[in-house]
Image (tube, rainbow, N blue to C red; front, side, top):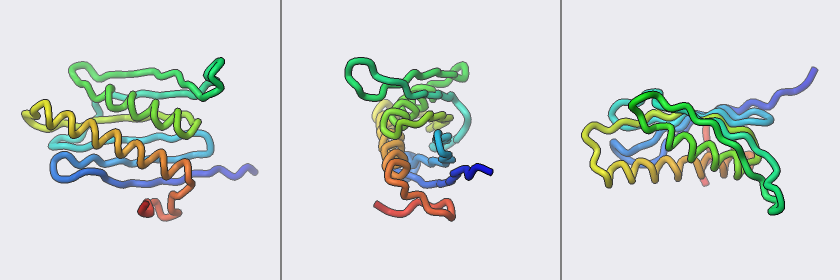
Length: 141
């Protein structure tokens, strides 16, 4: 019988109404993550990135498929996160995102997007370094 690696982790990044929540399942060959936050967490879009050889550069590249929920822009965060996770870990990455802040100003949206990117970087760091804890928690950097 084969041993299947499966780790689960949850963490947040940011403060107040700009806090982003990440829940992820890491398997031997892929990462499935959910990114939510704001006043109304929801499912607003998803993206899946699959690694492939990068051609002459020798670096890993990826192909990404995007599924937006009509009327939402959360797929933009999901696609950025899935590409980052895929390229940095070399694993297939599926990300579902849904962040809504009531009457958000452009600078608030920019902060939320930045927090999502930082949270995705933190997830990549933990996956790449194998620092997920068996109890589903995330140790500190």
